[in-house]
Length: 126
Image (cartoon, rainbow, N blue to C red; front, side, top):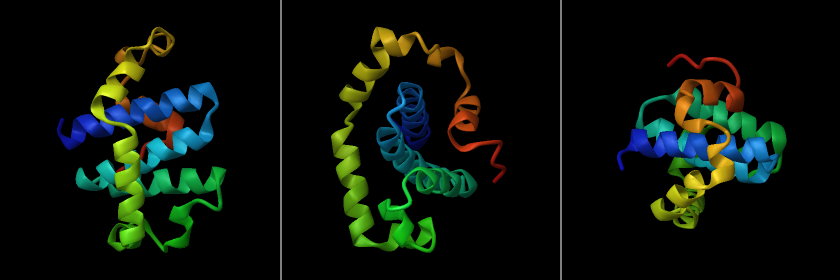
């Protein structure tokens, strides 16, 4: 998968976690959304993900950095991101998104930008 596909997949997973009310899981996916948003040069989306995470969990690791740009330079942050990526390999993501309860959310029909609005607020122009 390319970064756009990973980005879309993690947005969908974050949305599922939000709908299920599992905010700590949503936050993990928002970290991965943010990382892929950076690759796609969508810095405003990436920073909004971090803000959303900190609104829910002020003690989250991202809070120790001045910005996501600073976090991306830190080995501890890179290790954390790699751990999250290993926790959610492609096969596990596909299985989760194919689950009948997840299918009930109608994710296939919803645009990623609509899901992002639910996750991090209004449009984030880059």
